[in-house]
Every structure is written in C-alpha cells, then in structure tokens.
Amino acid sequence: MKRDFAQLADRHFDVLVCGGGVYGAWTAYDAALRGLKVAIVDQGDWASGTSSASTKLIHGGLRYLESLDFKLVKKALREREMLQQAAPHRVWPLRFGVPVFKGGRLNSVSLKLGLMLYDFLAGTLGSGQAHRHFSRAAFMARFPCLNPASLTGGFTYADAQTDDARLVLELVDGALSAGAVCVNYCKATGFIEDQGQVCGVTVQDQVDGKTAAVYARQVINAIGQWTAESGCRLTKGVHLILPKILDDEALLLTAESDGRVFFIIPWYGITLLGTTDTDYTGNIDQVRVEEDEVDYLLAEANRVLKVSWTEADVIGRFAGLRVLKQSSKAMPSDVSRDWELKVADNGLLTSIGGKITSAREDAAQIVNTLCENLDVNEPCATNGKPFPWLSGQDYRRWAGTILLQAATLGIDKESAEWLIRRHAKRVPVIFQLIEQDASLAQRITPTLPLIFADLVFCAANEMVVHLEDLLRRRIPLLILAKMAQPELRYLAELAAKTLGWDEVKLNYEFEECVTKY
Image 1 (cartoon, rainbow, N blue to C red):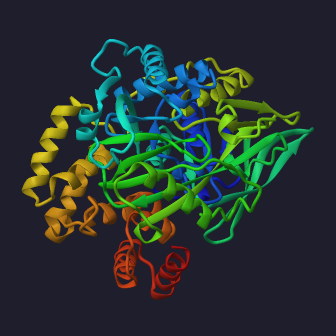
Image 2 (cartoon, rainbow, N blue to C red):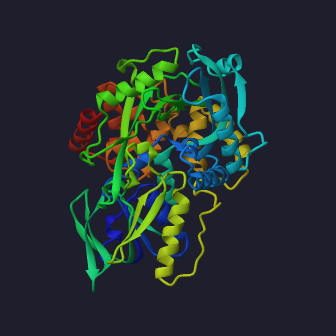
Image 3 (cartoon, rainbow, N blue to C red):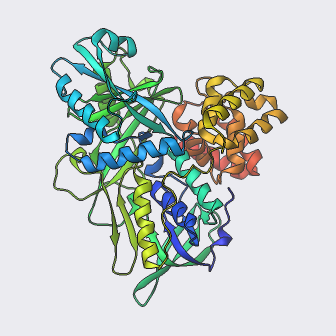
C-alpha cells in the first residue's frame, strides 16, 4: 500500500468517496470491483474516527431484540455469518456468557426466550452454535472471574469479533488492488459544482499542503461524525483496556445504574471493557475519555467481578462517536442503529448511521444507487467474496502450516495466531524479515502477542504517515500497553529507520504520541 497524492490531481473519476472509515472503505471496494473508476480520501488516517473506536464486535446485537428491532438484528446476523466464511482471519467466533443474578433486570425465562429468538434469526437454533444454559456451579467454572454472590446460573451464545481498524485497512487495500486511488491525510476542502450539481471536490494534502481538484460523476459523503447534518444525533462510546481476566469467551452484562448492556471481552490477550452511550455535543475533533465515564465502567464491572479494579488498573482508554438518526427518545441506547442514505438536491450522497457489522450491505446499497445514477448495470460483488488478504488454500490447513513455520522461527504460539488474524496471506513476507533478523521474532512487550517484525512490516507497507498511525491503528500498542518513554522512543526510532524520517521528524512524531497518550 503506497500513498500517492499526485494520482488525484485534476483526475476524473466515476466515484469519489470522502471518508476512510468502514462505510467509505466498503463503498470504494464494492464500486471498484464493479469496474467503476474510484477514488477515496480521508482527512486523517484510515479508520481514525469511529471505525477504530468500536467494541470490536461483529454481532447481531442481542440487546436490540428488547426494542423489537428484528429487521436490524436479522440483517446483522446474516452479515456476521457471511463474514465469518469470507474472512475467517478477520472475523472469528467469540462466545458470550450472560450471567443471571437474583433480582437482576434479566431473568432466566426472558433470556431463554431472547436467545432462542436470536438463534432462530441467525439460523443456528438447534445447532452446535445455539445458546446453552448452565447451572450456577457450571457457569462459575466457565467464568471464574465472576463474583458468585447472587449468581443463579447463566447462558452462553455465539457472536464474533474483529480488529476494526485492520478490517478497514484490508478493504482499502482491496480497493487499491481493484484499481481505486486511495489517499489518506487528504482533506476535502470544498465541493465543485456545475449547474447546481456536485461534480468534484477540492482537496489538500495534509502532508505537504499541496492542493488539487478531483472530479467525479458521483461524490459519496461517508465522513461519519463529521457529517454536517442537522438531522443527526451524536452519542459517545468509551472503552477501557484492563488486565486479563478472561480466556477465550466474553461476558455480556447489564449495568445496575441505568440498565444498559455492556461487555467484558478478551482482546489481544488482555481485557476490553465497554461501552458507554451518552449524548455528545462537544468538539468532534477532540473526543476524550472523561473521569466520570471511567468511574461508571469500573463501578459496573466491579459489581459483578471478583476483582476490584481502580483507575490505576486502566492500561488504555479510547472514545468514539456514533452517528444516529435524530430521535425524541431520551436514552441514546433506545435509538435505532439502522442506516440511511440521504440524497441532497445537488446530487451529493450522504451515508448516515449504521453498524460496522452491516456496513457491507449498506455500502452495497450506496453503490447500487450510484450505479443506477451512472447507468451502470453491474451487480454487487462483495457478498461472500473472500477478503483480499485471505489465502486461496483451505484456511484451517493453511493456518496450521503457518503456525508450524512460526514455531521454527521462534515466534510464540499466541503471537503467531494474532499474526495470522492481522495479516493472513501476507504472513510469509513477515517471516522473511525474521529470517534476515531473528530478533524481530520477539514480542514488542511481554504482555502482548505482537512482535517486532509485525511493526516493521506495517511501517513499510501500510501507508503509515505518522507514528500514531502505526502505534494506534496498525498495531494498537498505544491503548494496549503503558509504555515508558524509552520504550516508545525505541519504537519511534525503529519506525523512523523504516520510513526514512530525519531527526526532526522523529522528534516531532515521538512528542506527539507522548502528549496524546
């Protein structure tokens, strides 16, 4: 993946996508696969907004059954199953436990009915993936981190997990391979109109300040939280990274204070706790985690866990904004997560809302609309299509072979498994780096299954512009580890060597990360 702003200048495209989150990436990939001439730009890095600040789940949304949003759940479950087949490296199964507490908001009968409906909508009722009920003792054995007080039993059910930022990056790379021009750190500064219709965008390179006019027959506005729409409602979601308490299953829990659903999830060998859901009216460019939000999540988790986490236990934190349709409902959690496409009088198409799980199907509708407008008769090609980085071989057999090769190179098993999830068929290229320098097989930090060769590969091949791109989204070290400044400096120097940064650039990038994280 190489960044080349010059490919945009004064070019004419069929489609210009503004916004490099999951919706923009799926739209660009789909349109390019249909043979359209496509460009996609983002004012920052790929997935630098909400699409790298999610709960990292590909799921139907069990909680939406309470609001009777069956259509949304069924759509998401259909996409979940397809994605697990088309991208087993990118979307992998994750089973959730739902404890039942005496006097809790959800009792065994209501949960049983809800999970049966969830399985029915997923087409897994009666299968090995269907929900299961456990006695108190059996559930405690499965989730020993839970406080047994008031626990009466529990259920487990199937959903799936992903790495959101890498999902977006792989789709962008797929669009590139299909002929699209993809440029991050390229800010759209204004629309170009002809007879009242949008026909292009002026853009500015955020690296060197150069400007260009990019012309397109159709412009798609997929900029998420930056959408200038009065009919939108922004809500904020906060997540915390904490020490490991789970192995390979997650927990779905209900907050005692407000009845909201939240999750405790195994993530890169440690724990992801989240999320909040509150209305947001602040600066969309500076979304921060506030102390009361940390207190809320820790308090709710501590009510059901044996541990008693404090803020000192928090390893990392991040926040993102959801774009929802305007609603009169007081609680943000009660507002539908469904998606819509708005068409302006000047022809601009704007994507509003949605979920990472169902983004592919929604993007297909966007491309269907623009194909109709452009008089192009090409069907969607993304449904069921193997992901760009998936090996053409039998996945399980291939992964087994890769794990054996990794062991011979001195890579520990957990790091090798994450290497496969992160890079799939590109892993052999990373192995070549280790063959040249055996020290690159070592973990960057002992507590995380991430190795130095992975970092070097990402720096060289994944359109990294800033150190934060590399250490937050390509490899999420800035939120997964509390790194001392000497450790961070070492990684910055490693990146600088790969990216050709001079001392001034190195110092600037290092200080930016120190200040922000």
